[in-house]
Length: 589
Picture 1 (cartoon, rainbow, N blue to C red):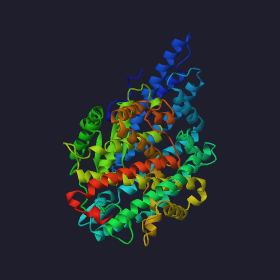
Picture 2: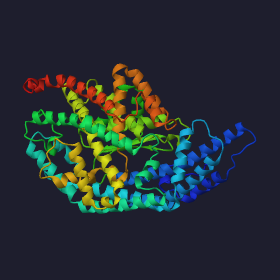
Picture 3: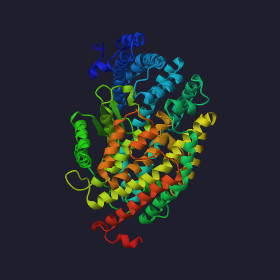
Picture 4: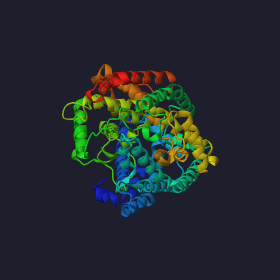
């Protein structure tokens, strides 16, 4: 039946709706009933697999079209192909998918392993509105415009044109005046787009309010909650999580900032003081070019688990990594899965910093999720809650932390690895309050859409949340830079309400890491088993399979921060007794 679908990457990029429509029409009309249960089960499963294959081709065409614009935001032909897809395939495909969902849901038979999938389909079918198809396509186009704005932001630094990402290594310069100059230069360039981003924001917000209204939802948050299939927690749980973070993690973050301030010997901690080594060591330089980054990362994964190492090598050998930063490349980092081959693709913007190592380890966790769940027969069963998808990635950041030094895969000396791990664990602590800002901001936006339509009100809200969750950093004289921080959080624009997942998953990842400290082999086995389940079980069950719990309370955060701070204290010994730092550890006590 499926022998005339586009197959090669070139064919997929040029795919037309006329190639897909006959298959959807046949699937919609194919009878599923049979004279006996066994035959009907076989018919339904064959039908589901055929539907899966058609959907996979459309998903892959979209991914390849989007990647064309992400790898080069100035590529007009790639943008044209993406917009053509959104206008001529995306909308009718959503409509056709809705028809097949209704057909399956009307059938009395519920195939084994599809319980969660059918629950999700019911929610999606209930949310579907024909009049929203054009609006959803328009929203994707606005996302591309945001990428274009951010991707074009460059500055002149010491005779070179640099992207904002390429400027970041300067923030690690031991000379404070150099850091400040670079930071202010980047911030000035970002503020130059303030009006353009504000105008784009108003378009996003207006569009989303229409989408929610069309779906009959009281507000966009209710719409998004259902779209994101959040069955296992509520907005009230998010507020509880914010409060727990304020109670436990804000004081812990203050301890991190105060320790940094004292070690730097400065009166107050400024934004350009957050990335430099507090002992005035030069910036960590883990790799010189992306080939080295790939080779050393491969060696690390082989030490964690040989099968994971082999899977990373597949990505290297099949050119499934686009790691370097360059002008006109979309911002950020992500891992996407090619639906047909069940292969992952990692996109990021490496500039030679330790954060690049952490980003690749993180995105590789997502990639391993693609590999582990690949044997699942139907793509409909691969929809994994993002709250767990991020456990896959954040756990890998911690599971690899013991392998940054030594052997051919080592990025660092023992002291440098201790320094890198301290920085990473401190970032875990300081991230939770930042996550709370982003999530609370989005709740405020969609609870107060009339106010949020005014960018000045958004600035004010962001400023209030910043003061609540991120004290300890001196932003005096930098008020505009601080209150427009929401401009630079891509999720607010492109993935609304997608951020609390990171905070929940980070808490889950610490639990997986804790288990690995007791029995690494067992922890890795549980981790891989949980990834192999795809979306066939509920979110709490996925956490349980990985050896963790989905929780929102202060007690769980206190357990996490105790482990993290105890580990930092142990690493401090390695770092401050290293030859390069002499007796500095005596001086700071």
